[in-house]
Image 1 (cartoon, rainbow, N blue to C red):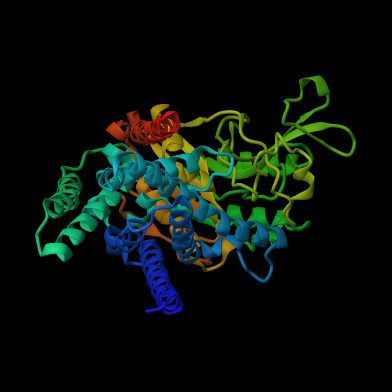
Image 2: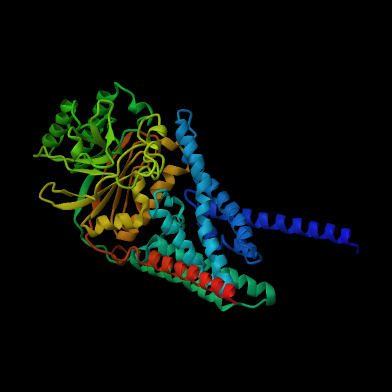
Length: 545
């Protein structure tokens, strides 16, 4: 064979190998995507990385590993997160651009575990690198939850909300811990696969992987069949007004919106509701900022007359006429007045004109806050939604609301929309005394896509992690009650105008996970740092030689 023939054969073999790798990467990405709610194929998650591992085990350069990694998880992101740009007829152009950017950015986070895998196999060999891979994986998920560009929506643990018995172990290890277990099962299945194809041997890794799968299920069956306690309960009325999320911000709609809220709320008063919940930004005005005294008084009168508490999402602003007292992140009006604005929750109480407020802390990147706005403040004016909600301030601190209806007394965490995807953040509310978790949200921006269904399912993990009932009030759905075992007790259909009352259980139990929420992610981060350190030392040693 002459050199030209050899080159042609090499090129053909190389192209065939590349096509095979792309097909395997495509399969892996599709398996991940199909495993994520609302699709029902979660069992695929336990083997989704096997095609991916087949590829990266053959590759020796960081760039080749990362290229195939990006492609794999771009497929996953498109299948599971296609909805983030809204793509509705009325959708804001900036929302579409920001959503598209997120679809391309999200796969970059998966380059963290792939890069750490490369460093590990260069330092310790491929087998050790594989065994460390689950820790690298969770390191990337954890880092994605703490940076300014934070969108830990597609974390592995969230994929398994339909596998109720398996995820009960979240009250010990949390959703990040579930991610570690799932990725270890993938690693062990892959090792078993390699052993089998090389010599038809049953590997010990297979038995360990089955054990990792079965033990959580046994634990879950035991927990969900335990004797139910006679816990204190409260009747909660949930209102789902189903307003068009764009039109509700138009001038002149306030009176009609308030009438609808009060009408639906009065219906639930008749059903015995002690606490009424309205969704995120229920009324499109800074209600307590002045000029809406009549509206505020009507709400106070409603609570007083019916002896009911009202927890509602609401825009809120603080104005600083003395600029020396304005915080650093305050914005300036055209008239020169400084102010801070919050996507907040307000609590109206019978017998009191005091209105406790919580300002949303975890803001949606680009949607509610421009990442790194402190370093590039001019971007805040350049990048705004048409409805003007892209420049909220971060709330100053977490707040647990105290409610005392009908001789009862309990404490609740009020979360705004996106905040429900942050495990440790919610556990902090529980540590501070929250006996019930309330989520107010508006998922109607995203139409009848996967987004609202995914958002609801993510709350299943939060309920189990902390053993707290989660009550959701969503503008257009899905409003629901989820018990501490992750069971949906009642829910609404998307895009329906409705309300319901449900007697929700309170709980003061503090789970092991709640007390140790960051332990596993931090240990994974430490392991990742150790690998980077070891790789650097080995590089330096080689240079010295």
